[in-house]
Amino acid sequence: RPYKTIIPNYIYEEIEEYYYKDVLTKTTILSPRTGYSFGIGKFESNIIKPKLAKIIINWIDKKDTKYIRNSRNDPSYRFKLIYRGSHDGISNESFRKKCNGRVKSLVLIKVKDSNKVFGGYSSIGFCSLGDDYIFKDGYRFYNSSDNFIFSFEDSEDTQHIKISRVVDKSQAILDSDYNGFNFGWGSLSMGNVILHANNNSNNYENNLKTDTVYIIEEIESFNIS
Image 1 (cartoon, helix red, strand yellow):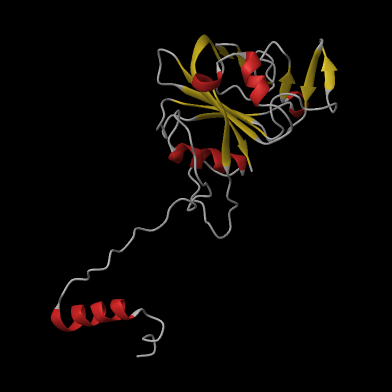
Image 2 (cartoon, rainbow, N blue to C red):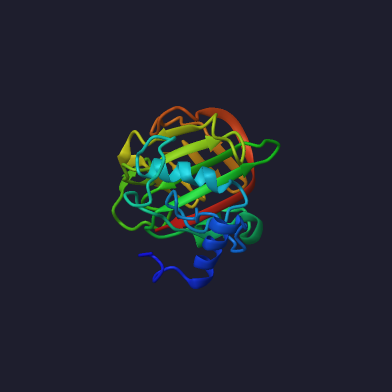
């Protein structure tokens, strides 16, 4: 009985009862903890389910959408909710007030009259990004090779996913008071309650490109660490 010294008495007694008397255990067996099984802790979103956050962190790590994360080898991420439109107001001003500075950031957008969800990840943030920019046509552009934008058909969709990674990294983010956020000059941009994804600048891959003008129903932004 080499393990008796390390097994609590009540569990050891229940094992004996089951083995000798076929009596089922009284001890509650807890299900495995899954919070960090795919590298994400608490995720406070009203727009998407945590299983879609799993896909997003695969993209952040530049892995395949269906990659199964290993808690031993893959990094974990924390998503800190810093802005929610229904609470803070849906406007350029309210977004820029809450979502400023150089920090890895995620934005999620639920649009009206549709189940569709849009989003974008920026490794440098969205606005107030400092002096390291290029000036083109009167706008400030910031460099990132890690940014991407995406869409889901609904809050749980894992089948009809679209992702577009940045093509021209020197114009990954446009920082302007005319927008809450602006990925690549209109590839995915917020103009108060309006969302555009026309990608006329071709600064991102064309997988999301649409001329449809959407109305933002809900929007959330997270700092990622």
